[in-house]
Amino acid sequence: MRRPGDGATFRRGVGGHHRHQLKQLSGRVKGLFGRLSIAVVVLVICTISLLSKMKSNNQSISRSKIDLETLWETAPSGGWRPSSAPRSDWPPPPSESNGYLRVRCNGGLNQQRSAICNAVLAARIMNATLVLPELDANSFWRDDSGFQGIYDVEYFIKSLRYDVRIVESIPEIRKNGKTKKIKGYQLRPPRDAPISWYTTVALEKMKVHGAIYLTPFSHRLAEEIDNAEYQRLRCRVNYHALRFKPHIMKLSNSIVSKLRSQGHFMAIHLRFEMDMLAFAGCLDIFTPEEQKILKKYRKENFAEKKLVYSERRAIGKCPLTPEGAMRVNPDPAPTFRSMFPRLENHSTVDSADELVENSRGLLGSAVDYMVCLLSDIFMPTYDGPSNFANNLLGHRLYYGFRTTLRPDRKALAPIFIARENGRTAGFEEAVKRVMLNTNFGGPHKRVTPESFYTNSWPECFCQTSPLNPADKCPPENVLEILDNQLEDEATSDSESFIPLNLTSSIAE
Image 1 (cartoon, rainbow, N blue to C red):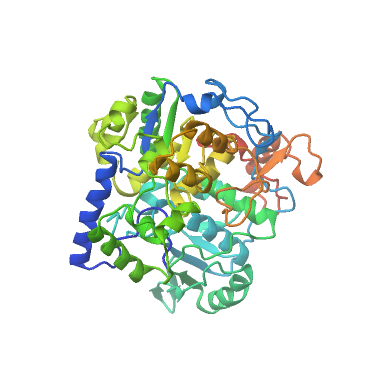
Image 2: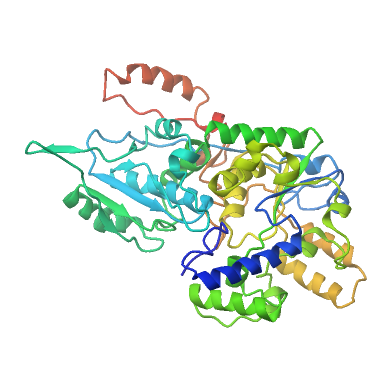
């Protein structure tokens, strides 16, 4: 079963006629938003009257008082700070590996990002040399940028040198006077495979063939692992080693600077795409013809399940519509622009050729990601499932508990349904009561089905004055110790490993 997430895979394997129908439907969906169907819409806000007036009596969950200024601050940390450095014995990779690991990361940019983290961990588990992960040039993006076109390869390899050995390609070998390439034995890992699969099935094939090729490689390693050091390795990959190429970072910072020159800004992810709508079963807002297309797509791509829109929406399984997300008047006459005059998207924030050139495919998704990461507030209208929103929620949590708003769709649904049925009395107060229980991006317990990539607390966080010794932060001078160690690395392979403190380079 395909998992929607990045809005990047819905056209794969679709026939010509059906693809045309989906394109037409896409246009109609876009009509609901005007120009706002781009993956990321940046909203520059003067005031947020609803949230600025909210108060909460629960200090551990949300702010004790929300006013215009505190709204833009980071969420309360409770004394925690991000730290993915090893805290126990973590030896560098042995001089001899068991073979080469190749993976093909399918899906959109953010699904691929999680897969890269899993690939590094799998290589560590098997004592394998990781070949630079392949990024799927899928039919939706039609983007063959690859890992080298999106991420800083040199930085990626250098950042993980104490964790795994990484090469850009499998080297050729000479045997009997002939040059020969090692061919990776192709395997299809089980979904959410346990560590034991990698230490048995995968490792055995690697030792026999010298290399294995895991494809597809999306959600192929269990997220919940009872090993905090393994989880911290995932965070080192996700939040440190995976740095976008300089031109992507430069363009992203340019956009952020222009937005911030006008004041605080909020990034909103309007997750309202066809694959998600088909998956969620939220079809009744469309015409019968459009519903037919979505139902056909669902039948071809997802497990059969009876879905009733009214029931799905009532329990919060449907995304907030533009009306629900923005609390706009249901009358279609008012436009977003008239109600929110400081609204920006790709085409309005900067009309430069560079932005137009880099706002498509994986590059565009990378720019969107960085702008949302650096925004003062981030709000997804639908975070289940959405790799883009979920990864950003996790990164912003790690990036100093930056404020996020995750509307409780289950609690909001009956309020909006009542309003649509003419019961408007008390609407504002009802919405405020729901929003009072919002977690603004502070530390909170991870509860299934919340992903580790959405919430890596507490494994990837520490405290300077902990109640539990296991939560104690690494020493402050660890970088200085590491620098001294690096000077001696060339002359000794037996140096003891000093944990790497990675917290100083967040979002470089």
